[in-house]
Image (cartoon, rainbow, N blue to C red; front, side, top):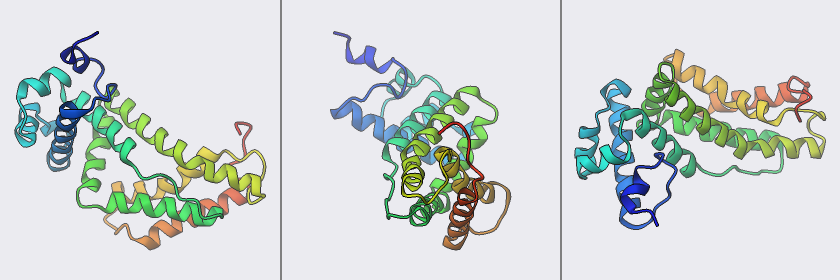
Length: 210
C-alpha cells in the first residue's frame, strides 16, 4: 500500500483523503482562494499560502508543487462544493434559479475577485485553462437536466442542446463581471435567464447533438 506521502504527491485534487489530510487540504485551499482573490495568480506564493493556512511549507510544496496546481485543486473543490440544481417544475423557474445562483457567486466580495483571477490565469496558462474548463463543465452537467426535462415536458423543441441553454444563462453575467462596472443584481440575473428561455423556445439551440 502506498504511503500517505506518496498519495499526496499524486495528481493534485485526485485524492480524496479524510482526517487530518483533508483538514490540511481545506485550510490550504481556503488560504489559496484568499490570496488569489487579493493578488491574482502572479502574486500567488506557496510560502504565503502555507503561512496563511498555518501549515508547513514543505507540506504545500510536496503536495501541490506550484501555484497553477494549487489553482487547479481549488477549482476541483469549488465544483464539489457548489450547490445542486433547483427544480421548480418549469424551465423559466429553473433557469432563473441557476442565474441567481451564478449572480450570488460572482457578486460575492470574495468569490467575484477569485473568479476574475482564475479566468485571468486561464488566459495565459494551459493548466489553469484546463482546470477552469473542467469546473464549468461540471456545473453545466449539473444543470443541463433542467433543459432536457423541459424538452420532455414539451416546453422546448426536440433536439435542443441542453448544455448550450445552460451556457446561455451564465454568459451575460460573466460578461458583465469582466467588462463593465455595472452591478450584478438580481434583475440582471432574471434578464439573462429570461433571454435564454426565449431563445431556447424559439429553437436557437436546436442541434443534432441532443
